[in-house]
Image (cartoon, rainbow, N blue to C red; front, side, top):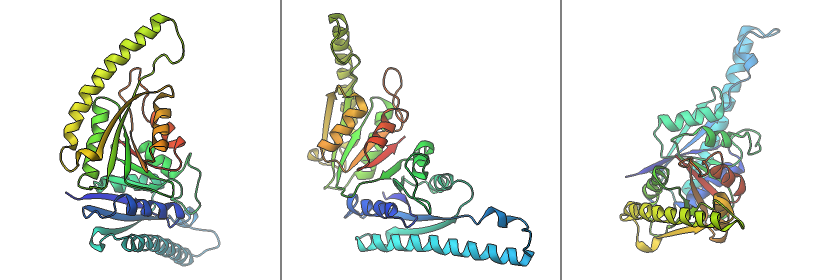
Length: 309
């Protein structure tokens, strides 16, 4: 079954990075389709109504000219990206193009297109997606992550990627959702290396009275038992399309907290891609995309991050 992702481009170096990432992480794949999309900026709002000093004909001519220029610019961005992907070995029949006109917020336009097209992922450079590249906070990419509920969003950054994937999971349904997605997207590639990573909750870091230490030991023991049951079930997701050597599971107790442990593991393990869930299970665990996911997104500015869920 083919996978189909929506790759956003505005012609910026950040958008080019996103194309380069796909060419590296999915090299040799024959089951990945890519639709490259660019959003043509909307014309100036003042031209949408009568303008003092301009006749109606002059206003319409000016409006049409700007619209044509914007569409032409977006079309060039798409064609340049497709050309780049072809040079990196993607079959032309797997590459598709789309240009749409901005109506409202750019992030909303992209999310709408991704959902309407039932894409398996929305791929964007960490910065860019506008005529002037913006800072991460408040940027289009940040909005895609924040509002992309139930749509996997891939935030591409860094310069050198590989086929090593660090998949950080929470137990229960959120974790199964992440693993199901990863197994679907990566199955069939013998070069992929996946580490499924779970951090035991360090509820009482540091030195405390013996009573609290004992409580922590009991809770961690119970969590270890739950984790063992979870990974036994998760193992079934990777029985097809992967060899045993491609999948590694690591359960770790860390004094750095969940996000800190993920950041440390990603760097020390030389993982080109980190996969996180949008939210955790709640309770005493950190809520993802308010805590863990946000910290990973802000802390890893030299990796690609998939936000799933």
